Image (cartoon, rainbow over all chains, first blue to last red; front, top):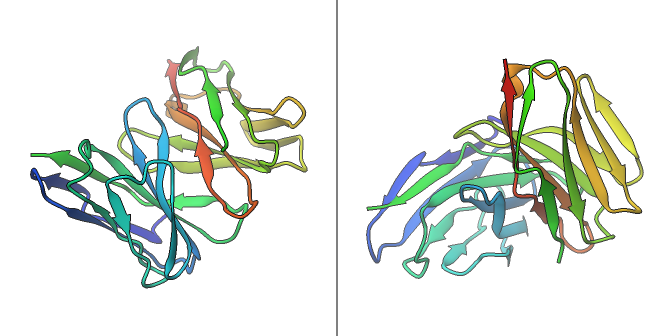
Length: 112
Length: 113
């Protein structure tokens, strides 16, 4: 899915630091999603947005924040309140309901 | 909310044999069920999906069946090949007010040459 770009590919966070993961899509999709993937646990929804300037908490939103100022961009901030941030973060976008979600290549976040 | 259970967590099959992965869901309002394949360190990629108005869908060696009454759906891979080795995720979605996908915990499929 070349239409969804996540950056950086690898990210390291220091104690007490906030970090922001980028997700950009040029598919003109309305909905965008952030998932966290831990080994053996599948994908868990952090936040999602179905329209610009609106977003909803997912199942594990604590310690994370998002914004949706533009249709094509949905950055995720991992705050210092997230005590166990080490994971693989995946961004996805979707055209309309009951259409497939398309994923980016992911960002692997680790603690220094 | 929706809960999706996936079994087995690991599966090894001889090359050329068939593989079956099963998922159950809890929300009877769910009406869209995609399957994703994820190779190590890469993004999940959609391999097949099914909607609740259909009982079965097939695409070459891959098929998905859906039993709405029992609330379960299954992925069938026939004539397995080494490149089928990956982690497979099922998911369920209800579009009542939101389009959240709830994922199963994944099945690591290994094809033995």
